[in-house]
Amino acid sequence: MIVLVTGGAGFIGSHTCIALLEAGFKVIVADNLCNSRVEILNKVMEITKKNIIFYEIDVTNEHSVDRIFSEHHIDGVIHFAGYKAVGESVKEPLKYYYNNIISTIVLVRACQKYKVQRFVFSSSATVYGENEVPFKESMILKPTTNPYGESKTISERILIDVSEANPAFSVALLRYFNPIGAHESGLIGEEPNGAPNNLMPYITQVAKGKIEKLRIFGADYPTFDGTGVRDYIHVMDLAEGHIAALIHLKEGIHKYNLGSGKGTSVLELVTIFEEETGIKIPFDVIDRRPGDIAECYADVRKAREELNWYVIRDLRMMCRDAWRFEKNI
Image 1 (cartoon, one colour):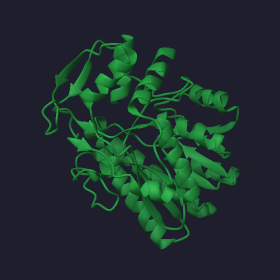
Image 2 (tube, rainbow, N blue to C red):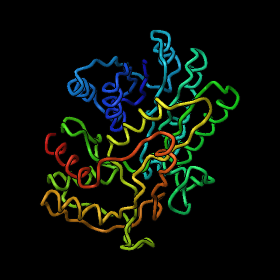
Image 3 (cartoon, rainbow, N blue to C red):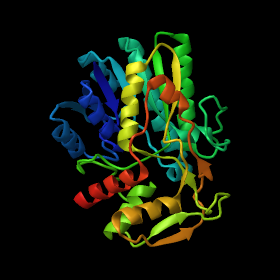
Image 4 (cartoon, rainbow, N blue to C red):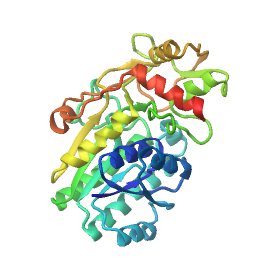
């Protein structure tokens, strides 16, 4: 099976390429490298000893996307190519709405034109917004806390409507929680261009001395220690969830939470990192970040029951793998 992976040079995309190649899939990557580097794909090929076909394109460009579909017999699409920083989306909403929604429309139009019937969408737990935890796939979505979550919700709606109008178009909506960690080789991991937006690369850069202190956004949330609670999942467990979704994908729309099913606070994660590495992480508490919520963790029973997918890597492994990667770059 040939799979087109958009955003395949990014953090989650590159790890999913490893999982796909190791599972026997052939992989085509489309990425504009706005937050990644082509060298990451070279490392993926080094790890797997398998080849990737790469197109440096922006998937909002319909002509460029059409070229890929016309040159290859694609069996399925995994769509990662979206901006993902909650705080930035509040400051630059048009950037998020345009890229995240238009890219989905362009890809779905190409799938319809070339009769590609399998589509796995990189969605997010932010679609749940301010809901009661744990978040369940059956909940009414409330993504109004930030434009990033809204852009994912709108993309989900587009995919649902297209699938309902064309029942053979099979879609998996994968709602991620908080992926961290890195590949066990230490060759690829989370390596943002510029200042990190996510917690774990912020921690590892403080540990390495690149940044003086960690900034914790708010310690006055209604949680047990005042800091935000999130559901952290190892990026390779998340990658393997995509393989399970692709293999088990049936006609219609299928929604799955991909998380550990457990909430962990920012301070808890910092403590575990310190214990695993022996490095003290200095931090300052600052104001809450716009768009953030107090608690976010998953009910993962549906993915376990329907996809036979389970997380197998714990928080300590996530911290060790992330630190191994940071030391190598």
